[in-house]
Length: 326
Ligand code: 2P0
Image (cartoon, rainbow, N blue to C red; front, side, top):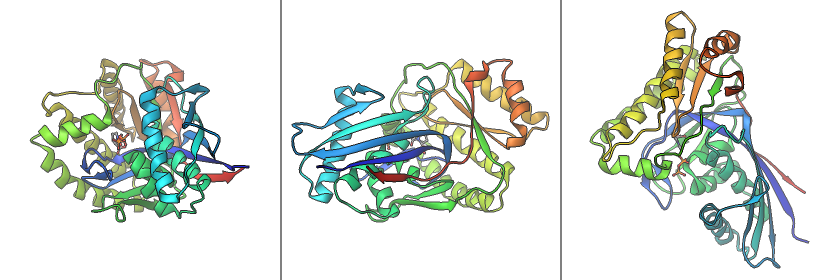
């Protein structure tokens, strides 16, 4: 009887962002990145390799995946088959515990959970470093979702040297994020295509890579010092520089909506009133507010001038991957 392995991995939000590859096959990034893994959003995936299957079967939140999304997962399973010597097709059952309307990235927790479940089901016993390297091949941000707390992904220069490790876990101080979940819109361009266009066409790209080094160093120090203001300020500036790359690409693109700008302004206004809060944004319209738990109520109350209470989701630092054999 083929064994089924289930893995649970949480999503992460980058504080110093990955935005551009130097090797698309090996998924090597142009620069390192630092993130916080969150407790509230996760993916749980079960994988069974079974000789009687005639193709990979992939179920996502109770539905068979579209051919395009299934292809990316099958390619990843091919890599696991290559590494393990497993020859059978796999049944993959994924539950994504990100509110369906949230539009928050699921490829990070998704490929981290898939890497954990598929590698173990195929007979591999990878340590967390190697699991992080494997997850990277599915999606860059998944490299970091193997670990909990604050995590750094070292850019590296080849498959062996590009992996993530923990900077701080557990997180023993008061930092959290409030996800401001905005109306889902059609993404103007996928992360993968957007970052490739930026690398090719933005005249500012070399400056991004250069400043990333300094941002990483300052962010490591701010996390070690448990300094919310520094973490927030560096993250906010880094996020806006990433979006400036998109605005400077040819053709230009951006992920903002009018509501995104409203949320940014609300955070800036709160800060000018003395509330210690900062924003970051990824490849979508949602805004994530970096703040202390003690300020949750005042921030939520202020944001409710513009948004419904259910659009404001509080997330705390979350754990690394767990893998269980059924
Ligand atoms: C990050 N993002 O560091 C950056 C910041 C979004 C903005 O990684 O092509 O899904 O699969 O490696 O990881 C989202 O891009 O892209 C992302 P691929 P991914 O979190």
